[in-house]
Image 1 (cartoon, rainbow, N blue to C red):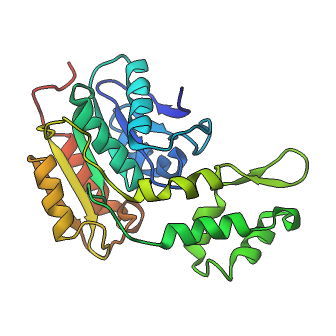
Image 2 (image 1 turned 180 degrees about the vertical axis):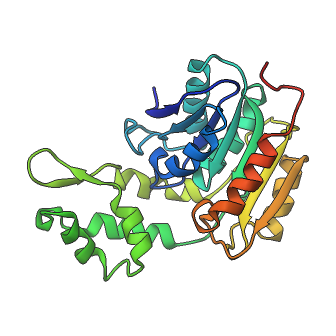
Image 3 (image 1 turned 90 degrees about the horizontal axis):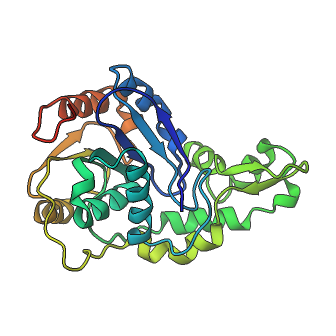
Length: 266
C-alpha cells in the first residue's frame, strides 16, 4: 500500500514525520517548514486509514511500520531520520526495532513502548461515531453537536479536522471510525516485536512535563529497547509539546539532528 505524503524538498537525509492517532501529516506542517528552512528534506506521511491515505486493515503496528518502510524505500532506500508522535511514535519504534537499516536517528514525541489505559480516545471515537452527519450542513453544526461529548474546544477542533465534504453538500469522516474503535486496544497497547534486538542508534525522547505518557515505567521501557535514548522534558507542555512548547521543542530537535553521526548523508 502506498501512503499519501507531503514532501518538502531539500538536500541530504530526509526527516520522515509520523503523526498520532486521528491526526495527519498536515498537523506537522508548521514545524516541518521550520525544519525545512535549513535545506533538510522533510516528509509528512499520512498513516494508513488517516489523512489522504487509503483505509486498510489491519491497523497493527507491524502493518503500519511496513507501510513506512515502503515509503522510505521510495525515497531512495537509504536510512532516514524518523520522528513519531504518540501512535506515530509507536510505529517509528516498531520500524526501528524490526528494520534498523531504515532508521539512522529516531525521535519520539511523548510516547513510550508500553501499554496505556487511557480511555480518552475511546470516548472521542464514540463521540465521532455518534455525530449525526445528516444534521451537519457546515462545520459549525458539527462543532455545536459534538460540544456536549467533547467540551474541550482544542480537542474538538482537532477531531473535526477529520471531517470532510462528501461532494454532495454534506460531510463524512475521513477516517474509518469503526475500524479505529475495533483496533484501539492494540493501538494503545504495545508488544515487543518478536525476535528483535534493541535499537542501538541515536534516539531522542521529547516529552511534555505535564503529560503522563512517559512516566518511570515508560522511561525504563525506553532504556531497555533504545539504550542510547536521551530523554528531554519540555516545561509546561502536555502530550502535544510540538504545539504547546513549539520553540523549545524545535530547538531540542534541531540540536539533536544537527549532530554528526556515522551514517550522515554525504
